[in-house]
Image (cartoon, rainbow, N blue to C red; front, side, top):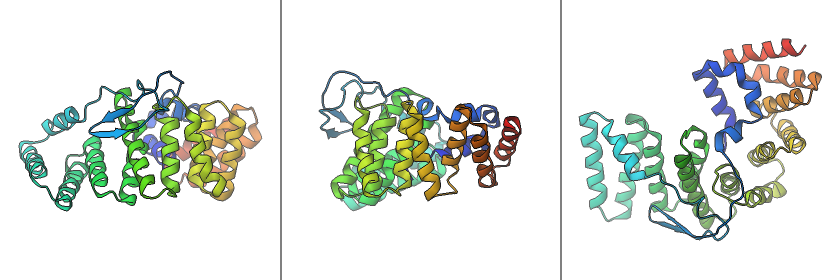
Length: 304
């Protein structure tokens, strides 16, 4: 799934209990806080990043430029490793530079990706090598996976330049996925979400249009409906968001993200009865998060 806010939110709650006290105020504005502005800007241009050229006549050159350097990040990440692990990374990089066969090169990218995932425990190098391997393979599945990897972790980026760079990576990977298979709905929604939430587009409607293509074809696509609901919340269109969230809740009654957001919307609108009803629906869905469940119980009592 794309912008998997429910899992992210729950992980945040488990890791940082202090957020429990502001969870309900946080829900309605979560994506604005996480992804930054999508304000319109002026110029148009083309962008090259890390050797990949993209035609972007409809996007702002300033939005598509970033001071983030992947080379600097890789070096800094490597320097944080123990001496033995540094030598392992250097060895893999030497092999990467020396091999010319694309299959062998892909294998080394996979080795580097796994190293940074399991041993180095650094997301950016892990995602970067995953993406580079996917680009070389030109595999629909792997390109789409790598695109969602960047998109799903945008909210973890505390730095605006890093967030923008991650969004550009996601955009490139989703576009490549759609070149392989123009009918890949997951990539369409992912690309639309990147335009809306990534801060790299001066035309958020371009992203919404891509997601609506999917919804028009399949109104039961939860990922597409949720992404449009989030976009509506960001733009202050609460009623549109509520309608889409209720659609999601009908399709997927166990969608904790949709249930919590609906409860929050009704509470903000002063409809205590409906807010309580939705919070009560969330209680059994939060069984694996005891602290969150306790906070929900308190919230229900406060509203009563």
